[in-house]
Image 1 (cartoon, one colour):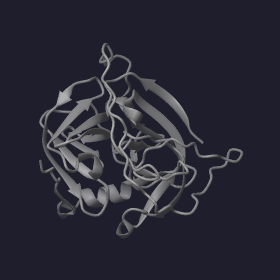
Image 2 (image 1 turned 90 degrees about the vertical axis):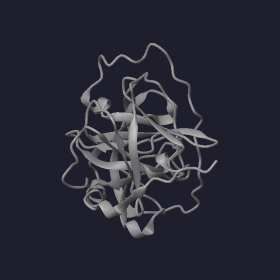
Image 3 (image 1 turned 30 degrees about the horizontal axis):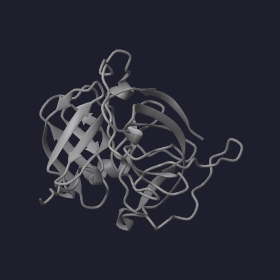
Length: 254
């Protein structure tokens, strides 16, 4: 089950998650009574897809009324040699962001914007070779950052996803962990979490939070049934602890 908690207008733009994969989400997962549905057979017909780049509005940059959960989210704009796309990300310390590898790959320039519309310069970006994860370093301090949870959530646990679906407003959606499966995109990674929380193109790299506001995973994909795939926090911690897990992000060739 899921429901949208809140949507506030914030400058927008969006990027890819697979539809039928990295994770452009449109379908709503059915539920029976109030019990979460376990994931069905893993789909393998994933295809890349980019969401349309939405235009920024005006008069919507005030930080008033945003809570700590919303303040941790950032929009990451990937200016390529012949394309422009954006995804979501979140801070883990004052100058470090986590997002997806596919959000930052093949860029000519990366631009970070905070929840209140402030642009923050990027100093470096690196991507994991094993998982769809990336680390982005910033020149200035970020507004807010959460703690990483000490353990992964289990089936039935409630989760909240915070990001910028469809290039629209900064949005929080809720759902439940409904199981785990072998990563359909990176088999060597091992198990990833499956949830029924709704994600859309532009949700790539969104933080997945538990009831205490701690990060329990990172959105990176979804399937055609509307189930979203989450890199669990245990994997995030393991990779962050090993500098050799990350290499400089690829750049595009004109």
